Image (tube, rainbow, N blue to C red; front, side):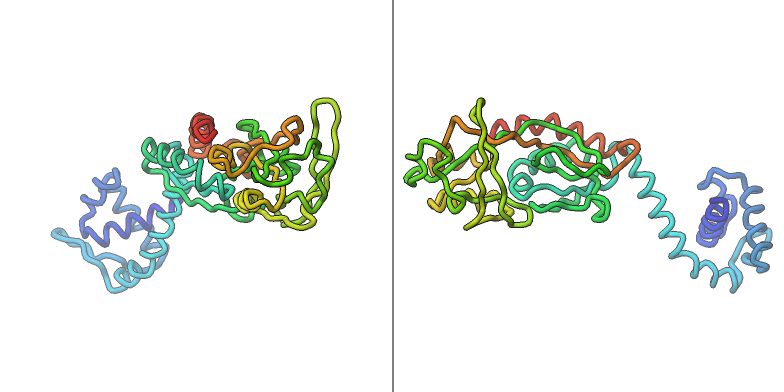
Amino acid sequence: MNDYKALKTFLLAAEKRNFAQVARELDMTPAAVTRAIAALEADLGLQLFVRTTRQVSLTTDGAVFAAQIQPAIAMLEDARKEVMNAHKADEGRLRISAPTWFGKTVLPPILSGFRERYPRISFEISLSDGLVNIVDDDYDLAIRISSQPSDKFTIWRKIRVVPRILVAAPGSRYVTMQHPGELTPDDCLAYSGESRRETWVLSDGGSSMTISAGRSFCANNGEVLADMAADGTGVAMLPGFNIAEHLRSGRLVHVFQGWAPPDLWLTLYYPPYQALPPRIATFSKFFEEQVASQMTLLG
């Protein structure tokens, strides 16, 4: 970084044409500025400035050199600031991946509240219901509603339990069924990140059973499944808060209420940091504090 400092000193001297002013702005002594410029000239084998008792001016070589290095020094300065900001708790960029429905419904008020408190932190939000490679895709963190992750290379943090329920349209034949064993694979609308079939595991607290789902319909988006179920197409298995408005409005009803699948978890995923960068740790703490109230409001 000594060369970088010498080049910054040279560029400021080229702009100000006054070594004493450069010294004041860089918190150096005039003698230190003179030595830095002299060392740079010796290294290059060029005279960069003409010095007189009254003024300092660039030589032709000095002007050419200043014009050539200025863009590179500006890029280095931007990179230095970005790296330094990444280690501040209240400044920098956060690139976040979140599920589509969660990102549209729960996340906005949390982000707004965080921005009010930390206005110098900027966000890039990407909504996707599919799995993301948090390292290769350059995310600072990902919000997911899922079972316990199997990826051993990411760090994950459980925030809260997310129960799921079976739902169907109120006027459909599924409402009159007494046992989930009456369902066929064609009746069950599957959620799958790859739009494939899935296996439902249901328990009544004493016994359990499995049902093959998605033979006739599967999707990687909960809103699509909720709408299909509300149209009477079949039974969907979705997080309760995800369909709270459908339940309140009567578009969907809870069926087979004695039977439930394993709970999911609302989880934060991180790249394999040795320690969370301060801005990410700050957001994670705020998110955990706020998400419970937002999801409670949604039912």
